[in-house]
Length: 448
Image (cartoon, rainbow, N blue to C red):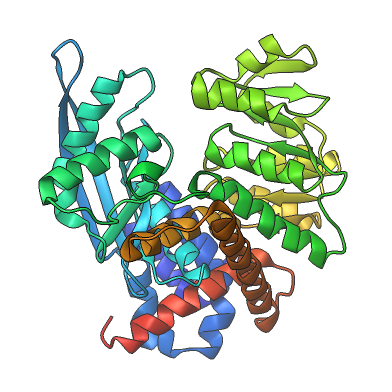
C-alpha cells in the first residue's frame, strides 16, 4: 500500500517518527491515508487548516494503574487505557478490550478505526477505545468483578452519556459490562446510558449481541447483490467463535449459505455437514469451553490444531471474525487458490496489507472492517437512544433499523468509491466516506 500524495506520505513518516513502537497504529493510519490522496487533491484546505495532522493524533490519551486482589489474597497490577480519539461528530464511542495483548498501539489503532466506522453509520458518535492487559480467562467471577470495579474506579472520571460511552470488545462480555456498570452507578449515583452492551434487565438493547455478525452479513448481501450474486448455495468459513462469529454464522445460514468451519485461538473445526450452531452456542456461550469439544460431540466434524489453518478450507465466502491480522499473505494465497469469491471482515483489521493487496489484485470482493463490522456500534448507538428516551424497541424493530443502517452504509461507501475514481473499491470508499464527515465537522469548529 503506497501513499501517492507527497504531504500524506510526509505525514505518515511523522506518525512513525513520533511513536516508532506502535506497528498496529501505523498500519491503520497507512491504510486510511493511502485512500485519501484523491480527496486532498481536490480539498487542499484539509491540509492547510490542519485537519489531516489533527486527525492522526488522539484528542486525549488516558493510561492508568489497575490494582486488584486475586482469590488467594495477592495484589495484582494491570494497566488500563482509554483513548478518546475524535469527538467531532458526537461523544466518544468504542469498546473496552481485556486481553494480554492490549497495549497503547492496539488501543490507538482501534480508536482511530472506530472514528471512521462510527462516522459511516450515519449516527452522531465519535471514536474512542479502551481496555487492559488483564486476561479474564481462567479467572473466577469474583476476581473479574474485583478487577472491573478497580478499573472503573479510575475510568468513571472520564466517561458519561454525553462525553464517552464505552462498550464491550474481546474479553468484555455481559458479565464484565454488568460489573463495570454497577460500579459506575455506585460511584456516580446515577442511572444513565454510559455503557452499552448492558443486560436486558438494566437498559440493554435487544439484538445487540447479534448486531455485529448480522450487520456483517447485511453488508455482504448488499455487495453480493451488486455483483448479481447472493448467499444462496455458498460455502462459508467463519473464523472465531465469539459473538461476531456465532451470529455471522447464524445470519449467513439464514440467508442460504452453509458454514463449514469455525475456530478459536487454539484451533479450528471443519464440519462437512455444516456447523451445528446450537451446539456451538452451548459450548461457547453456556459452557465456555474450547471449540475442540465440538468435534468430540459431532461425528461429522474434524478438529485441527492451529487457528490459521482455517483459511486452507475451500470456501466461497471467508469471514475473518477473530482478531487483527489473522489473514496474512500465505492465508490470502490459499483462499485465492481455493476459489474464494469474497473476504468479508468481521473483526477489526483482520487482514494484513499485503494480503489485502493480493485479495483485491486477484479480483476477489473485499469488505473492510470499518464498514462491514459497523453493525455492533450502530446498535450500541440505538441502545444509547433507547436509554435517553427511557424506552425500548422490539428485536424486530432493532434488527430492521440495523439492516437499514448497513444498507445505507453500503450505498454511501460504494458511491464515495465511484465519486473519487475507484468504483468497486470498498476499502477506498469506506475510508473516504468516513473521513469526509469527520473532517467537515472539524473544519466547521475552527482551529482544530
